[in-house]
Amino acid sequence: MNRFSSSKQPVALSRSGAIALATVVGAAATAAWVAVRARRAERHNPPAGEFIDIDGVDLHFVARGEGPPVVLIHGNTVTHADFIASGLMDRLARNHRVIAFDRPGFGHSSRPRDRLWTPAAQADLLIAALERLGIERPVVVGHSMGTMVAVAMALDHPESVRRLVLIGGYFYPSLRVDALLTAPVALPVLGDVMRYTVTALSSRLMLRKMAQAMFAPRELPDNFFPIVSREMMLRPVQLRANAEDAAFMVPAAHAMSKRYGELVLPVTLIAGEDDVVVDPQAQSVRLHDELPQSELFLVPGVGHMAHYAALDRVVNAIDTPVQAVSLDHFTSMTEDDLTLGAEPEMGGR
Image (cartoon, rainbow, N blue to C red; front, side, top):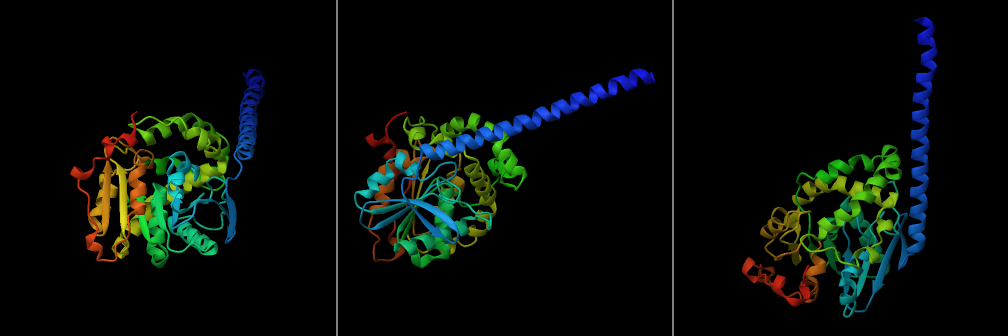
């Protein structure tokens, strides 16, 4: 028995070692492949705009048009190019100076690890950038996670924001399964390994279905991935930004929801009735009920990406003059008023 045991033990150890070695080699090869893909994505999708250095952040933005200023703040997963794919930037540039930022870690903007990139921290960064660019009191348009940054701008810098237009917004804390699933990706070391290996691969498998869910019940537009580069969205730096932002959503909403009474500027809320990413009743409708100076548009037959389907509604919200009267004169929309879903420009599936 002793001879049998001693002869088998080295074989067992060598098999374990071989498996461990293969795992390490496979992970290293995957990480190298991911890094190559990320560099290639950045070469094939060079910066479309300009950079400004704000407090150690290389902030990328695209500016178009002339006229009253409008700032566009994108949500998670995407970049500023989302507003180009939707047509919103070109429409607004006819009569406005439009500035669309890549939020930290998205697109070509850097995301230093020397601070927590909460919505408030991102708001401070964008306010500083606007001051440097000489942009005064813009209308601020936010979509999804971008609505939290837009609201933080208005809460912490009320003199710097003229009006808010909030699309598919998240405003009150709720259970977010996406935040729980992506939390490990936001961690140093462990998250770094995951973003170059298992998460990089799983994200590639899930991205199209995730995009389809954002647009459901409508079809994913044919121009979405050609304009909002798939590979740019899958880079490790952007996966980290997504994960960190998801982790900050719930606590940030909890903190900000206690301050919504401080908002005295005009607010327009736009949400798809069939949004499966952010519950419009629990979020946009609830905030509308809390803000007497707000107006609400629930767009029938539309999901999370309401700025694609309800483009005219977003533009009208920005262009409607701010009346020099009491905020009580802003009209709250009822469900009977929401006929946009039948208008021709909405398109079909």
